[in-house]
Image (cartoon, rainbow, N blue to C red; front, side, top):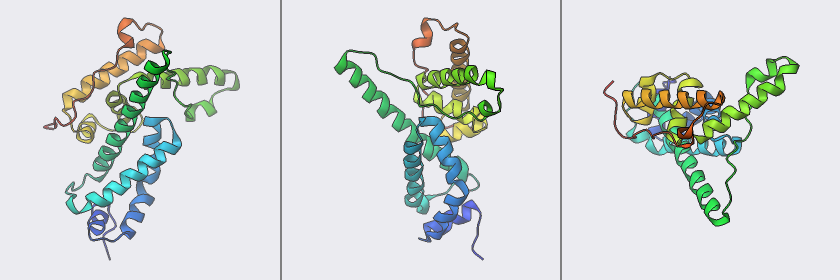
Length: 211
């Protein structure tokens, strides 16, 4: 019987067995779209980015050598695609601002918070405002820093896994997440100073962790 684990499916995909792609989609597509939506704040774009990610798996399958690390490999592909999309958006916003001479609206599309539905009715409005503010502040982070924080806080990835996904050092990941958390905490408490308006320092992609 053909192997059904992720590594075996990638081997089958490398041999041109597209049925293996269907099995990988069944297993990982929902989580991939959820992660991309959290990064991008837009379900339609998240679906497109996730689809592009799986198409890249097809093309990369013959050279795939990530034994036992399929999810790290998948999140690496998805994260780079999300970062590219966020950077394109930021470039468009800056261009629009220069052309119009007016501030650009950076509000994120409202994302459903599973905790909000469980909140008492008289707390839902206040809770929704907090969630909206949190996502607005997340959108102000540099794309790399936002990806780091979402991988850690929402996807539950370890620092080492995030370093592997982003291709950077473990120390860089820790510093980036610490600064992002500090900035969000200050913004949510209303204590943000002049530095809060600055973008978080980007992760240095390509500097592999030794861990």
